[in-house]
Amino acid sequence: MARRPSSTPAMFSYAESIATRNTVLSSLREAAAEMNKNKPAITFTINGESEDPNYVYTTSDRIEGEVSITAPVDTRFDEIVITFEGTTRTWMERFGGPGTSGRSTLYQTVSDLGGANPKQKAVEKIPFLTEAQFLRLVQPVDESSLPIPRIAAKGQKYTFPFTFVIPDRLLPSACDHPVENNAVREAHLHLPPSLGEPGILGKDCKDDQSPDMTRIGYAIRCRIMRRRESDAKNVVLADTTRKIAVSPVFETSPPLHITDKTKDFCVRREKDLRKGLLGRKLGRISVFAEQPQPLKLSPNSPCPPSTSVTILLTWLSSDSSTPPPPLECLTAKLKTSTFFSTTRQTYIPCFSRSTPDPAVGNYTELNLLSSRCISNTPWEKQPSDFPTSRSVYITKLLVPITAPKGKHLVPTFSSCFVSRSYTLELSVSARTSAHTQPSLLLKIPLQVAQPGKEGDYSGDNGQSGDVEEFFTPRSVAPPAFEGIQTGQLPRSMIGTPNRMSPPGYSVFAQGVPVRIPSPVGMSPGCG
Image (cartoon, rainbow, N blue to C red; front, side, top):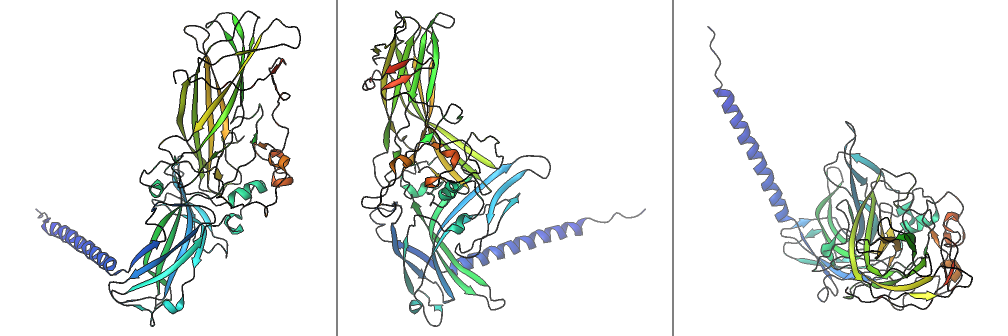
């Protein structure tokens, strides 16, 4: 009978391999700790940071300060690079069949944007995130301030000043891909605001309502380089960044051109009201809201931005003896939409694209702004200009709009990979019976802008533009591949305004003209 081989030697061999692996890992950890211990320390000092460490910079602001480098041991180096960089990071989860699912990240080689075009590709199943660089400003280092030979002495402090100015536009190489029209190109070449980094906005760490899949950041970066003798490649001895909050200037844009076919927005609603669910018809109510002035941000100010929107309500009764229904509640909500992609976008994303793009993700948040009782709002009867047995009543509501508490708003923008837009949702309800309170919902585009500082003007050398051209409504329909008209707007974005009645009148679907009186205001009620 053959003797069964003993498993003891194999057991000892396995134990020895485990011990060897642990020894190797420990050695690697010790080597890494030793390298970090001997790595030069880099600190940033920004002028004025002691007064406001969370200052938000805007267009044309100067970032001035100095970089201090101290080496714990004598360290040889060849170059010190100080830059101001802007980066975008996005990723998306893809779900599909075998071999198609996984994480898709944006990968772009870091290069000087003033030189050759950077490469870009989509990478599947990457367990880490990479970044795309859209801005890189280099601070020249005075050669006379560097030691000769290039050895940082142990414990000696070396200081290098820097000055960066926030630009208002990016270089054309930052957006050199095909786009549908020049309006998209202009939007992509505008500096985007900081997004996805609320920790740099102050102690409150307000939420900017961005998903984890998007991040736009600015930072001052200092790298200490040494050229390797074996292959002449640069080796990074130390690399440190200091994050900076940036909110560029975004001027007010013309109002959008909204039609009955627009799916994203609705500024007018009409509805027949009945006595109860199946009761007789009481009349027809119409709600119309004007596009409000934008919410104008003011960085470094404790006051939240605010604006107002005017709502016109018109009641056309079924007969002259039917009074208008009492109003109940008015609710205002702010819908924040963030669109992101791992590929460069040729259009400005929106929900109403005729062919949804699977490569574009979206994240929305709905915040309650106010909910008010408007039961004390009076109706005003209007005289009729022609014989009719139906009575007409109207009233106006002035709704204040303020940024939601605990939320940080960024300007409305659109870049190559990330876009942000806002929608104001207003719901007005009326009481037709003890158990019936029908409501009408409006979806109004709301722009969040940031004007320049006093004395700053980014227009055409101080020359005022054509007022009529500026207020030409913009289309929210998918832009067409057509020529560009005056003001660099595509032909599809220039059209007739909304079907409006003559000044001082409102129009029902039936064509009944109604005179509009002065605003009555909104009753505080129980809200």
